[in-house]
Length: 73
Image (cartoon, rainbow, N blue to C red):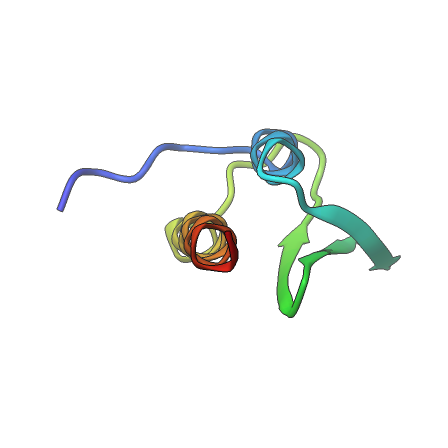
């Protein structure tokens, strides 16, 4: 498996918006994004690099959303 990119919360947010996700709500330093039945939470901590597990979760959710869109058409 290729190495995951090193993303900040702003990078993850940009990728989610590009994939059609919307900001549902925020609580403290966490922002919750959603599209259809999918949700993903991204912690926002002033320019800190996200943990690889969070980056992986964001990428998998974006991929899953793309697959759901393809099957609906």
